[in-house]
Image (cartoon, rainbow, N blue to C red):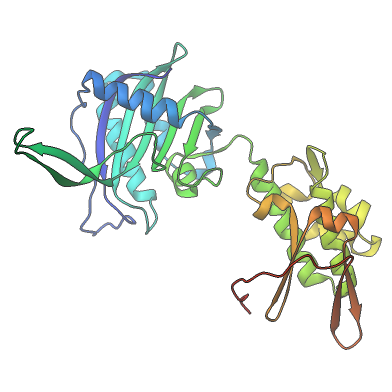
Length: 339
């Protein structure tokens, strides 16, 4: 369990930083004294709950953030705690995007499994109602009071949390983005924390599938080949294998004369590497394929494609026929597709 040793709170304004902007960071000039119940609430309802499923992050020197330097200062020199935390708060404001809401930044030194770390927690303001009884039980009533600066606990998805410590090669630790799930906000992880994912396989998996599908749509002239390659991509990525390799896919499923062009269309770090497969960021986790025509969208599962339940036939005159094996089970209502 994470235990807080020292803490300080700063208020971060909404929106993107501007040198001449009217909104500035409200900095604390002294540590925040935490009552026992407040400390318990933060430790149990915010930190322990929020850090149940973290992702490992490591310092990225190319990010250009000074936050890792401030982390090292806090861990090595207790007298730098307040000043370094102020620098961290200013870094967050400068890194924010235009739609970033206001909130508070909690910087704390903690012990976790006997080692010292720094917690950085961004919590947005929330709204709620407080129930208050006025008068006695016989003649009294209940009043409701609107509260617009709540910082709530484990029922909310308003936190970004990083638990960082010194490691070989720089600062490293865990991060959770409860707003974006596995799709971490880049401004927070990179521009602010100065870190990157220790394993970004889900990003590389998405890059591979998106780039491969873009290549199918833009570089393959034959509609029958497009259908064959797109179906092969879904089958390849849906296999039980825990990793994938672009050149392996090309060798197994693409005609020899287009393989080099396909590999060149991919990002460099995906084109030649063996990548751990993680479909978390892929729409539908790669479990199906959609086909688009003017006013028409057809969707098929990977299982149906593998069984051959759907056949795409390219005909003369820029005409395509989609043949479904078996009978249609039912029709349903839905929104009209775009385009």
